[in-house]
Length: 359
Ligand code: SF4
Image (tube, rainbow, N blue to C red):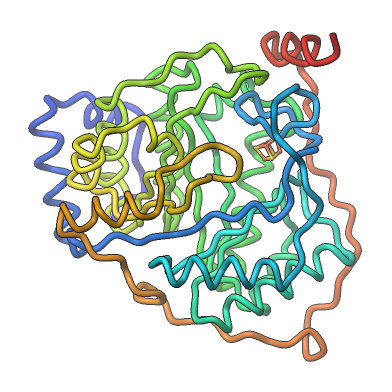
């Protein structure tokens, strides 16, 4: 496994003639995965909106004016019911997202831990995306039976400063480092089409591919420009850019599950089929991705049938984690107040969107 990728090497791959790129990516894919199996995950927004962060692409940031209806943390039984529905529809993984800057010890986190225990007992892989976490919080999630923790790098370190001012790229790497100290797998990827250069896409892949071990799962999102966010006017990227990004990700991270994430509603079946050929082997199912539209589950199942794809069973890449009950936990909450950074620099389009929301 190569871990010393450079931006130039990755750019050379990304810019290859398309047929060569596809051939190399599909060959790599076949060496490490069954090309007819695709993992299906369901993303569930367990706490929506009202987020204090300023991510320029996100309709859940409290400071922008979007149509998002916020909700408090969902109950455990409500989450269980949705997980059962997802399982019946063919999902092997539930990813629970909360619009938080970072996890705080207390009742709400205890409730999330109970959700993790509950879903793990349904024999589904459980993933959480809750913002920045400490090592102790990662240990508590692991003990509850968490299979994966999602924490996207979003883009290159250079371009990150043009997207978010309320935290730094290093905070993301530190959280991934905390997850790595446990047996929870890492899911980390990014978004293309935010106005970044191709060099930034390569830069993000360098940051991910030089991690040792590489993330077990890498979601590749296409920006869904939502009205009211700083990126509302950015035009969608072309399918060719998505195919190139997926193929390059597959080549530089051969063993990872490359997930086609946000932006699938803008892709034709042919476009998605090309992404699967280029090495994508995971999708998010369900008609919503946190807050943005996603293809209908039945449509996805029809596409699977048409392409001869099969949903991946849970725990084929790694054994099911044990769940330790709350009363038997070895990791007591430490009530830490970690100093995650807050660079606070000015990003003109974020400021404009904020001013518009106030007007
Ligand atoms: S992406 Fe996450 S952290 Fe950023 S504003 Fe949205 S919910 Fe908050």
